[in-house]
Length: 146
Image (cartoon, rainbow, N blue to C red; front, side):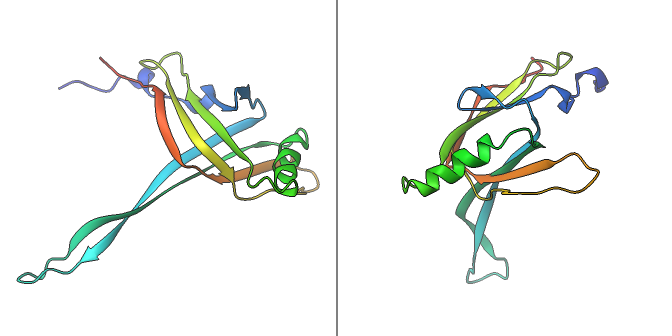
């Protein structure tokens, strides 16, 4: 039975976040997930309840250091201009040089759900968390051991 080569486990040090083709160098963490709901279906002749696929919700967040006001200003301006929501594309990448390759995921139709207008704590580096929802995603590059 093969044993895990620990050097092939992926480390987050080499993660990158790109927004509309621009590397967001001050961001150091990202998460994107898909929440799948199921509806309970009662069935006659059995006590077992079935499950039917229901709504699918895609959400995530990016986080990093506060460096400029530019990001918050762009999102707020889009709402002020009455053009609707600020919509962008994010590419999340993991590129650990010891891994079996690298992985990149494109998140489409990203809309941020919260803006930190001002946030700080005396004696601490200012960090920001940007939660979002998105419409669709696709793998641009996949990691494979073969």
